Image (tube, rainbow, N blue to C red; front, top):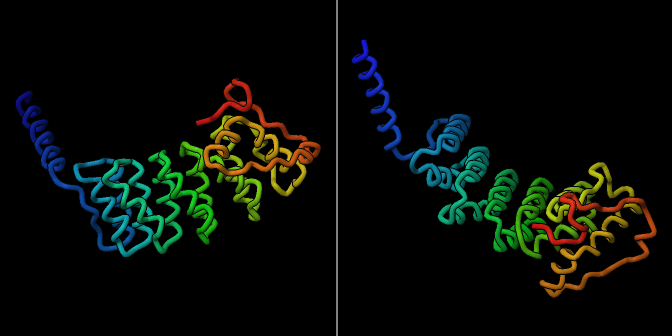
Length: 239
């Protein structure tokens, strides 16, 4: 009995080893099957998983599969897969571009911030711009801070202004009323002006050589004061 159990365990181990030795490959005759294959690869991370996902993210004819693979690459944030993620920012499908923005933000460097900055400003799709703004909140450097503040202040789409404000507040560690809407113009302008007086904001603008325009009259309006989330004085630089 004991010997038979050992033999069974040995067979299982051998089978696992054989599977682990295979290179990952996205397979399936239908988009649904290939999406399921992508999910299994991203979850199990067998050898060659990143290469398989990068190939599907850029080459699969179905946008849903490319989106799933691009999102799956968030588990493989490595330099060799970055070109595939960056190419996704120019994909013809908005949902693929949005997934690429989310994955690229995980590289958390100035190059990612610059690419997301361009996407946030130029893409025609709201979903993509929203993903780019959220991604900028993950990126270090002055470019992300300036773009988020200027979007919160000037963007005509109220939803995008809210996304930008929330990403900026989280980045700087400032507590804000998450229910606030830019449709409350006076309170929103006051919040923007108060944020402009934070050290991190001023430093970001100075680093880029961009003029920070203050509107002190806006501080006489509204009622909202940003507060530091971490307990350190408001105005200290965030991430």
